[in-house]
Amino acid sequence: MDTCNRGPLTGPAETMAGAPALRLERLSKSFAGVPAVSQATLEVRRGELFSLLGASGCGKTTLLRLIAGLETPDAGRVIIDGVDMTDRPPYERPVNTVFQSYALFPHMSVAGNIAFGLRQERLGKAEIRDRVRAMLELVQMADVGERRPHQLSGGQRQRVALARSLAKLPKVLLLDEPLAALDRKLREQTQIELINIQAKTGITFILVTHDQDEAMSMSTRIAVMAAARIVQIGRPEEIYEAPASRLVADFVGRVNLVDGEVLACESGMAVIRAADGSGELRVRHGTVLMPGAQVWVAVRPERLVIGDAPPTDGVNRGHGTVSEIAYFGDMTVYHLASPAGRRVRLTVANAARGAVALPRRGETMAYYWAPDSGVVLTQ
Ligand SMILES: Nc1ncnc2c1ncn2[C@@H]1O[C@H](COP(=O)(O)OP(=O)(O)O)[C@@H](O)[C@H]1O
Ligand SMILES: [Mg+2]
Image (cartoon, rainbow, N blue to C red; front, side, top):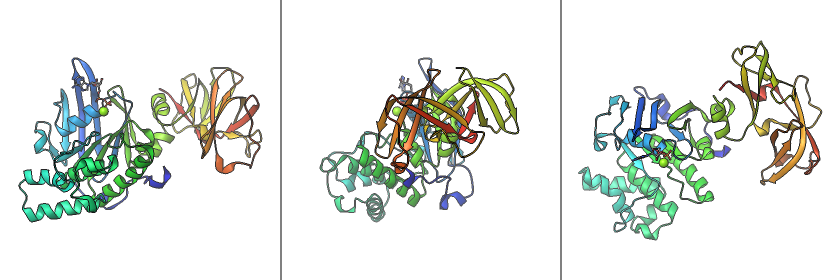
């Protein structure tokens, strides 16, 4: 995952002046009175690889179709490259969509599939030929241009679909779960290819996915959706390290959540009494919390450190009985039952194997975590 995480937006597109590639203003759409997208507001900069992340049914495809003009919103605006496109039909919008089902023309060659849309636009023969060749090279398919779709693997077909959509040089490319049908290895490889293609073309990508790892590793920024709403927008590390709510913390990665009450909050340090009677927790927190407020403390499993001898004072400590151990090759996940009956999840990178004697099932395990390893959530 780290290999392709680009962090903040970099690259040539960043320096381009002008309007954002896409702006949505309070965009809403219901089906038979049930909201599929509710008040979606967001701005995507040019050259971003922006993801819409959320569980199945939360409204991602509907939002993409609203951007493409394939659905008419009940309210709100769609502004693409500074132009209000809300009332424009799909074919007048400078966007193209790659769907999960590749929808290639089976009777046409790979090159024919890519050329199809360009012929419709009545481009000249030479220009079409050059563009098709460039696109085939871009997706590393130059040697199979004459094949038919059925002679290709799933991954290759998806690359043709991508090339076909990119050939028209859209301002914004919409991708609806484009990798969902690929097996894990091929998916990871194609994720990296997609990032490279996006960087080479500078075209703004909006990627729909329900796969948090995919969104985390590929995106410049992510909009997390739940029940028709955008619940948080941020860079992958912001979403992961500073989730805005329990819902986001729980959906993006694994998290230990403890509910409690704020006892004090001074110079950025919150003291919280755990509701299960397990004691007080100290969490470094950016904003002021009122004593008495009901909150949740969220700590990622990899932030818990095994041991009972923390190197510094003022850290949070806990212990529990190991109830489950799951080995994942690169890491091991421990489930503990705390004395208060809470389930605690802790991960250990296996690079550290052998360095400490790891507990076995049924044994007691002590752990600690630093105040700046947790976050306080108020909703
Ligand atoms: N054409 C439609 N008619 C009726 N309901 C729809 C239609 N399209 C989507 N929905 C409903 O809208 C909600 C969001 O669907 P969708 O946007 O496809 O979610 P996602 O892509 O996140 O899985 C779902 O409850 C779905 O059943
Ligand atoms: Mg969908």
